[in-house]
Each structure stands twice: as C-alpha cells, then as structure tokens.
Length: 99
Image (tube, rainbow, N blue to C red; front, side, top):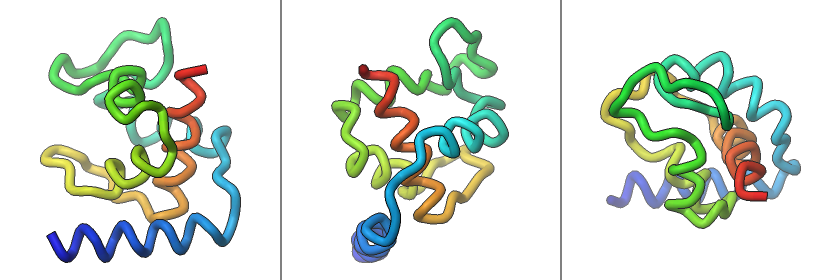
C-alpha cells in the first residue's frame, strides 16, 4: 500500500510539471492498450475480459487524477508500464470519452 501511495505522489508531482496531452494519450493507447482494450467507441475489443476505456472512464467518473492513479497501479495482465506522464496522457484521453 505504501508503494502505491508513493507512486501516486510521484504521479501528482509529475502531473504539475506539464499539462496532460489527450492526443498523445490516444496514440499511446493505440500502440499499447488496444491490444487488449477497446479504446474508442465503435471499435471491437481484442480480449473479452479487458474492459473498454469507456467503462474504465465511467468507473472513475472520467476524472483524470483518479484515472491516472488507476493506470499507474498494478494491473495483473498489463504488458505496458507507463511512466507517470504517459499515464497522465492516457487518463486525459480516457476523460475525453465522457464528454
């Protein structure tokens, strides 16, 4: 638990250094996340047990900070370990799906 809190604190510090970039987040999602997740409306999901980004967004109220925290947290099957800025960008992209 302490490790997760430290990661979250690092993400928050890094997130204040620059604004999140939703377009970059979408590109990251297309190259790293779309293997398992449906990352955009109208797209088919690659793996049935991986939730679509819209579902993930709803779960966290499309709030960038909550999404960022979820992305940098441990994922049992995730084959991509985003850096804090990358996680923030992916979260910014996911938050756009709620608009």
